Image (cartoon, rainbow, N blue to C red; front, side, top):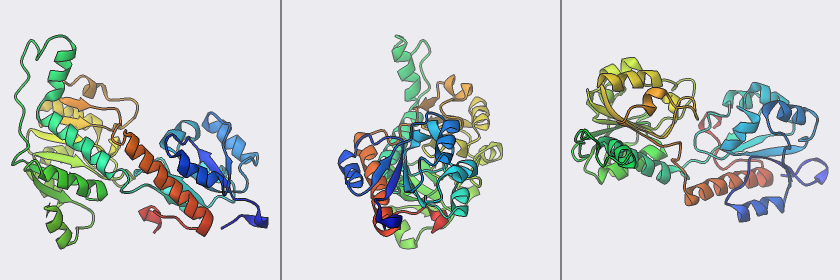
Length: 337
């Protein structure tokens, strides 16, 4: 699919290509790459309105491009050139992009499903084990030169035989279920749409309604996309329905949990421990989480591997290539299918 007057297609590059340089060179061989000179949202909008990006039919955007453009919302979309028809987002989660705003402008959006499944599930297992075993307490004491601490940390718990609840059973949730089963955990899940019975059997999981999942889980992992309907899915009323002493793991998006409510639940003992990779107001982290030694914290590193970051870039680039060549996307986000 070429642009008008048989000129080369134009691609707007928002962010940088860090790993998949060979794949990106295949794009530069068939299209002109336009890179903004802007360094903040105000100047980016002005640069776009000036006509600099006119003729661009597809945009590649990285997670870090948010630092320049801000959220891709109705204001930003209105400033984009009329020629833009595709936004290829490098990431499984796409809460930085307003899908309704893009849909209203007939812009299709893609993400990178499956590319992140292994790395994110691996991170969840790391956090699950660390939080269950109180490793964060010992690690902090050791770095402070106090071995296990002047007061010994509380004994942790083994994963074997524990009920592991997974909220959100997409690609990451299914991957996580298979890995958790290796540790002898009993896997329950809740999803907006129940899995096919054969898939449930193959993965070794049992469906539960939302309240039952909360009530029965010894460990609860959150694997939901963030959107207006899922924001604060877990808050004070939900914590009250859980087993006392539950462990919470979140590798999805921080705002799935009401962080203030989580801090209160940790302080009261309703939640015994937590393992978190994502936060409600990143890069800021609630002080009550930072100060609690029973919370294992990592700074949004769920896909922070060379292999996964490369796969994500390659997947996004494949969407760009398909948009240029056939006017379609490999992985349109569910809301636009």
